[in-house]
Length: 215
Ligand code: 5GP
Image 1 (cartoon, rainbow, N blue to C red):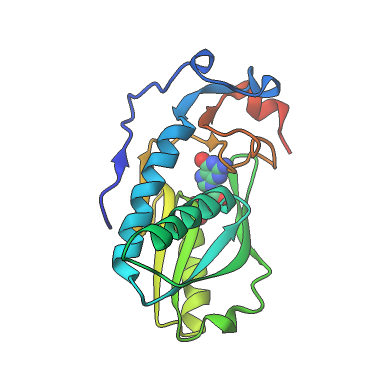
Image 2 (tube, helix red, strand yellow):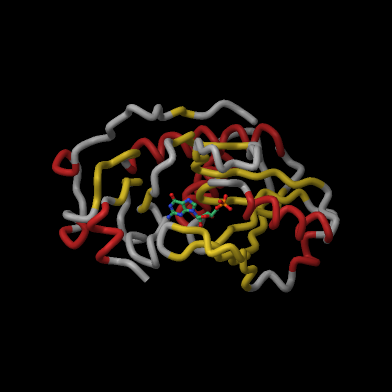
């Protein structure tokens, strides 16, 4: 796995009042772990790394919905900008798959694949899976299993976040934005029972937030 920004366990994040937070979430968050500006800057670099690897070969970017949609659009915007403005140029196609594994902040046990019935289109292609977060890694291993069955030329995984957790099965993505402590994070399209997707920074949810938005 390539280099990533490591956020240590004793990092306290930023107080909420130093940045702009929607009023409806003000009491539901512990801190701001990654402000949106830093997310943007890190994605710019991931895009460059990806373009350098795939240069001119072309790839299908596969968005893992719903949590991955912000990372996916911002990453692809950056790749397209490099395509327009540098000598490097990666022909891009897009596809989408939806997986569901969490209720509240607990894995439901079952990892559900919703959609993705046209995955045959990925046969012989370079596939870049774009995911929001790897926690235990079980979801990604299941998805990789499914994808290998359709025989792509190669598969790479880009995950914005990787959690440092004892529950990890050991899976590491090819591209990672940030390694984070073992807390439940929301914002930048990551949800808690569908809430907080409308928050632009990545924040740690507090107990009140978990209670208020419990399933
Ligand atoms: P894994 O199978 O790696 O344990 O879990 C992966 C999925 O769990 C992610 O795609 C995401 O949907 C969800 N998940 C894991 N940790 C978090 C978290 O801290 N916040 C949010 N919002 N979702 C998480």
